[in-house]
Amino acid sequence: MKQEDVAEAVAGILVERELMLGTVECGVAGAVSRRLFNTAEGPLVLGNSLVVEEPAEAITIMELPRPQFKKAGEFSMKAARAGARQGCAFLGVQISLAIWGQGPTLEESLLQPLYLAVDGGRQRAERTVQVVNEEALAQHALTLVWEVVEAKRSDW
View 1 (tube, rainbow, N blue to C red):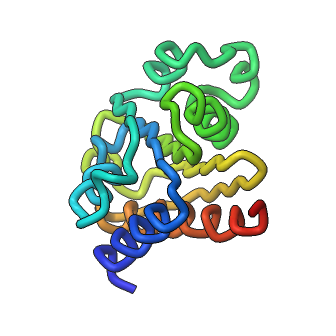
View 2: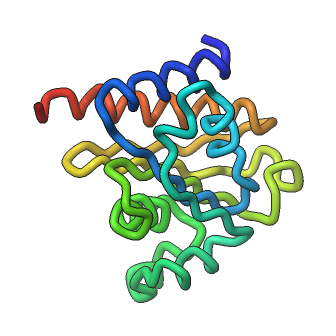
View 3: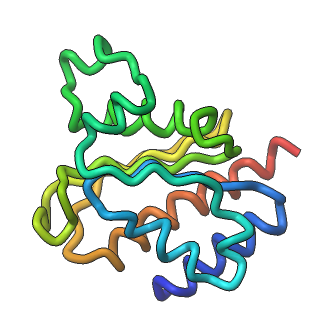
């Protein structure tokens, strides 16, 4: 499925289920929120986004508990999970996507690991990816959101 198709499908299912998605994007210059916003339904389903250059900025802004990052570090899946978990309340949305990359932009850190985490309450998903461009990142991230939204169906 093409990236535009994934973005349209995710926006459509979020509208259908009356869910809002928020994003916490570190080091990827808002790559995913931009793509979702540019869909026909995007403005209806994209809640707030926090776009920062470095994970440390998100940790400070969102007041994430620094002691829990002592062992894993600020650039880790543990940090991404915390960002997604806190993102729901911080951004005022039902589903939060956190993308933890080593900033300042995706182009400058090609093929570095990026940590993706989605929190939808009882449904969560995570994935570590290495991508060569923003389109591939958006495809992976939105597919992960799709998986969580589909899993939320069982809550109804």
